[in-house]
Length: 131
Image 1 (cartoon, rainbow, N blue to C red):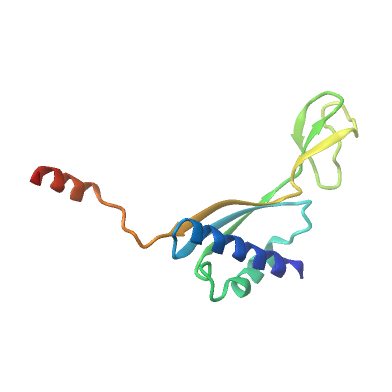
Image 2: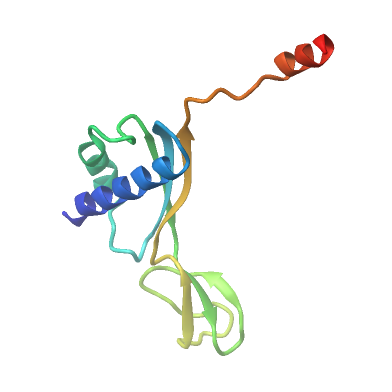
């Protein structure tokens, strides 16, 4: 199950991001998983709690989005979604297409939790009134 090793690498990346931004934990992670990536979203979701146990991402919510293949025709320049097993241009029928997306695993969003409080609007207003 290579999804577990992917999750372990993801946790390493999240740990580095949290450290870099002075965060104590990760609250939410959003991943885009291409249908042609060879990654099973359910297996990844099941492996994540094991990989993240004891880490800054232990309590994080993992959200996955499945991304279908998107192609560009080299013959007529049209772009469109395509079926994973049929990367053919719908416009002209050409097989000469370029895969634009749908084969990647992308960390699209991370929400971090920091200890330092963000000043509220009311406290800064009170401060201004005091001076």
